[in-house]
Image (cartoon, rainbow, N blue to C red; front, side):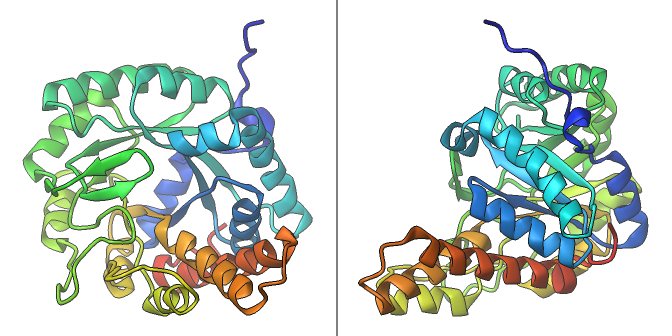
Length: 324
């Protein structure tokens, strides 16, 4: 039997258009947190409800196949009801992270996503434009917002992998936005995917000069930063003290992300930090209580650690607290 299309509006979700307008003028960024399971979703909603922050629930292609698209849809619908139950009916977007084909984006739109990313950044410029435009034309028919990408981030995240950065060329952004009609643009200015972003001794810097040049060319246009985990060294230390082998994992300084979020950057993607927080909590429980075999006894602390991390990000890094 063919699937019946589902509108995100029937799930209580919203798209990102109004959220981004407010973020650009308000000098903050909306958190975009990836989730694959119940505990991650609970942590995200608890943190954002408590800090009264809007949130973008991100699902990668890999997460969608891991968690099952039908269950994900009901988790997102449940997230809306859960936030209301917690006393904070915050705006929630369900977003496809790094969609790589028109067909995947179309399928997500028809299964209740309110926002999709089409990542054609690895393609020649004209092909990226054509693919992005095709997705935009379809998505806008359903009032779904679209994120495009120019430039390539190094690092590995799920099925997205690249060895080297290609910085976004400011002179291309006006043409790309005009030709495609995208609602937001992910750019490459020095952030990186994964936990092993940089080597010890390196002092990673976001290229705020490129960001400022892009802002001049497309003033007020919503900009997105991917690969923006800071890789907290206390979490890396906890993991390694309890049997882990995360050597030389370094990320982007939170002070730099705060500077970026005060400008036109209105969506910041954070995934690896959450993975580290959960892994640190789980390893600690299993190492200190080797007799433990109830998943709730290690997934519960992992969920709580993730919630605390995301509350900190909303308040101290993104400035999204109180903006719901």
